[in-house]
Length: 227
Image 1 (tube, rainbow, N blue to C red):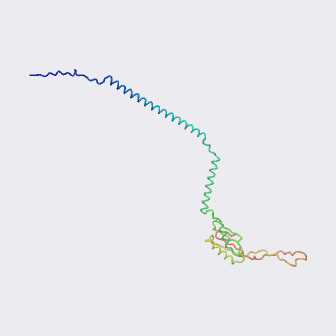
Image 2: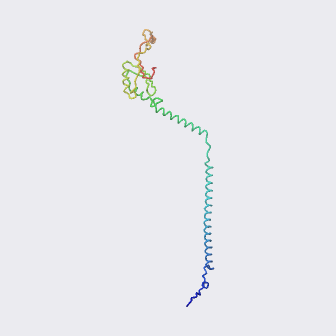
């Protein structure tokens, strides 16, 4: 009968040295080198940041100086009381003028186009032997009064008919017409027997009144009182 005996003992094996002096030195050197590189890089970045900060401070100081110079040169002026009063008065006058313009446009103040068209119409429709002695126009032409004289009464209706053909007189109606022959002083009488030899002829003063050779008329529309 045989028996096996194990004579192997692990303590007799050659042990491997993992952390030797040389690897540890190399690792330590790598760590120191990395640390130095990181320190240099950080220092370089800090220097750049400090340089930028210094440039920013210089630029900010220059801008503040310019701002102060501008404030001194363009300092706000004190508000002028006289100028403010003038501006307020001008605005008040402008508002008043605008209100007047609105009144004129609305026709509240009467005829804003003037009365020249009426006088041109009266002048165009002239009738021989008839003449005007007075004209009255009120408002926007709503009231018209005509005073005049005519050699014959029949000329007056003829004149009225011709006036109605004028565009400015369309739609206008006359409410009253007064016609009369006024009395005038009689003409002086010249007597030939009143002159002596070598003396000028003298006229005797007139006595009494006589009828005028013309008629006098007054034509009034509604809203105009005869004068």
